[in-house]
Each structure stands twice: as C-alpha cells, then as structure tokens.
Image 1 (cartoon, helix red, strand yellow):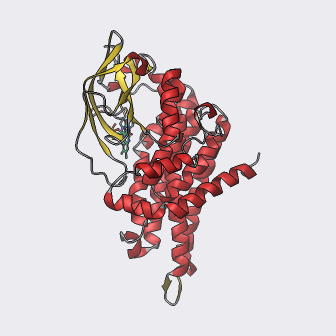
Image 2 (cartoon, helix red, strand yellow):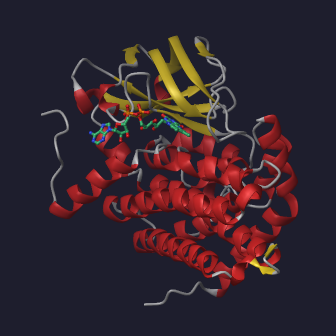
Image 3 (cartoon, helix red, strand yellow):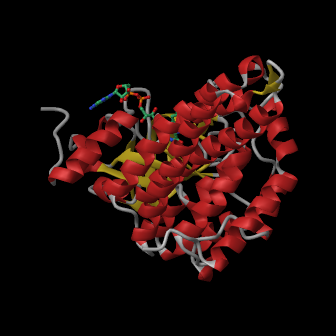
Length: 386
Ligand SMILES: Cc1cc2nc3c(=O)[nH]c(=O)nc-3n(C[C@H](O)[C@H](O)[C@H](O)COP(=O)(O)OP(=O)(O)OC[C@H]3O[C@@H](n4cnc5c(N)ncnc54)[C@H](O)[C@@H]3O)c2cc1C
C-alpha cells in the first residue's frame, strides 16, 4: 500500500495550486462580495489550462486522467473558495458525468467538448419543493410526443440555475409511483417554456446562483433523453463520483481553514507570546489536522479503489459524510482560534464556516449518507416508506 502521490500527480497538484493561488484569491473575494458566478472569460481560461477535463475522455478534449487526479485539482480550487471551484466540481465530478455515462453519443459529442473548453456549464435539477431527501416523490412530468419530450414541473435548489446553459432534469415518465417511473432529460436554459424564480439568498455559497426552475410545456428533442423510466437506480449509483467531489469541496474548505489558523496563531500575540504557545490552541490545531487528514485519506481511498470505474456507495458515502461533518467542526475551530478576527468579514474564516456547512445538505444529507453506509454494510436497502 502506498499513500504517496506519483511524480505526475504531484506536478498536476502543483500546477493547480500555483494557478489557484496566483490568479483566484482576488476573484474569489469579488465573487463573494458581488454574489456573482465565475465570469465566462475566466471559465474559458480554466478550460484552456485543461482543468475542466482532467478525468474526461481524450476523444472529447479531456486529459483522460484518473478521478484521483481530478480530485487533487479540485481541492486546490476549493481551498480558495467554493465559488471559484464550482465549475470545476460540476465538470469533473458533477452532472457532466451523467451525460458521459448515460447520454447518447450525439449528446456527448455536443456537450462534453463545450464543457471541457469552458464554454458551457451543466447543472443538475433533481430537487423539488416537495421532493428533497424523498427524491422519488418528484412530480416533474415528461411525456413523449412524437419526436419530442414535453416537460412540466418545478425544480428547486439547482446550483447554477439561471446561469448554467444545461440542466440534467430528473423527471417522471409515467404514473408509476416511487423510483420506477423516474429518468432524466437534458433541458437547455433557452428552451421555450423554461423560466427561473427569484435568486435564493443562502447562508453561504455566494457566487453560486440558485433559483427555482419552472418548466411549462417545455419541448425538447427525443435525443435529449439521458436515461428513461427505470433509470433512477443507475443515476444514483453513478453518484459515487459526485459524492467524492462534494467531499473534496468540503475538504478544500477545511484544509484552507487549517492553513489560515496555523499562520494566524503563530503571528497573533497574547500575554507577550504567539497564541500557538498556549496548549489549548495547540490542541485545536491538532484536532483540525486530524480531521483534515482523515477526510483526505477517505476520499483518496474511494477514488483510488474505483480506478476507471465509479467509487462504491460505501466508500463514497463514508468519505462524503465524514468530510461533511469535519468541515463544520474544522471551520468552527478556525473561527474560535482567531477570536474576533475569525468572526469578522475582513478575514476569510467566517465565509469558510458558511460555505463549508452546505456540503452536508447538498448532494444528500449526512443522515441519509449514514443510512446508505449501513445499508451497504448489511447488503440490503431500507424502505423509508414502510
Ligand atoms: C447549497 C445547496 C446546494 C444544492 N444544490 C442542488 C442542486 O444543484 N441540484 C438539486 O437538485 N438540489 C440541490 N440541493 C438540494 C439538496 O439536494 C436538498 O436540499 C437535500 O437533498 C435535502 O432535501 P430537503 O432540503 O428537501 O430536506 P428534507 O428532505 O426535507 O430533509 C430535512 C431533514 O430531514 C431529514 N430526513 C428526511 N428524510 C429522512 C430519512 N428518511 N432518514 C433520516 N433523515 C431524514 C434530512 O436528513 C434533513 O435533516 C442543494 C441544497 C443546498 C443546501
């Protein structure tokens, strides 16, 4: 067993770190202040540098590297802020992968190169006002009509709503209750009948737009079908990589909080000496490091053992859930060791606390991950409805 990265992986990590630390901190502050997403020219630059195609196939312009390579890059971006990292998360581990796994060759040939070049973003629209954890309650309907699919419904919490060009829209193809009738269709922002609600104000996640999506008799070509009725299980099992991406976003936030706390506590003086000389501060820093390192190892294990395939439900849920919990604890400790400055908007720590909290809700709550973990351990699903 080797916990070290290869020379090639270190070079990739260094390249992402250099770029992120040289070019993104000012942008991250601006996105936080203005609550705006990564501008298109910067997104194209991500694309030119290859960051949006690390683990996507070479035939579409990606680099064809491993999922672990992709997560190494993603963590470097997430250490700057979740807003600057979000398009990288979406491309390398998020909804684009649904197109890659289940889309037709024509859809892949259209969408993947655009995403890899940084021209377009794919978002996911699963949740609805009355279907979150109970996603199989979703009611957005998809009806086949000749060569078209007609969609009606309302989506909620889609990250990127109103900004992203494409939406992987989970919908119900027939009246069968629960998971059986559910599949997914690609909807475009400019399709007739698509409109967006007011911009949501969230606790964190500034720079990542969120809004309701209204679908009123939206007609898309039959070729936009990603997966039809009965595909819900496959969509969920393909979520393993997304869980690792979600976990890595939290890890990046936590690792950055630790780095800031280490620097601050060596500089800040109290009682005539640096506060790191107080044992209570030392213990907090050690606890932060234990949590960050353990999260990173769980994520790397899930990605490394998946090789070219998808991380398992067990390993990816464990990594996600652990990362979701520790980022909340680590950023809280970060605020605490920085005292009043940790709570001030003049320093990035309070933003890390707000941004870090979200990951244990987005992509499935921590309690649901725990149900998945136990379910994987005993080898059967638990019926939440019975
Ligand atoms: C920042 C952010 C970004 C998001 N981005 C997206 C996105 O891009 N696309 C998208 O489609 N959605 C997105 N979501 C929505 C997210 O997936 C849902 O919020 C999440 O699945 C929880 O659903 P809910 O909010 O309806 O909560 P509910 O399902 O109402 O859950 C409320 C509480 O009840 C608990 N609970 C519910 N059922 C059970 C159960 N069976 N066992 C144990 N506990 C249970 C939950 O764990 C939770 O604590 C995002 C959410 C956030 C906060």
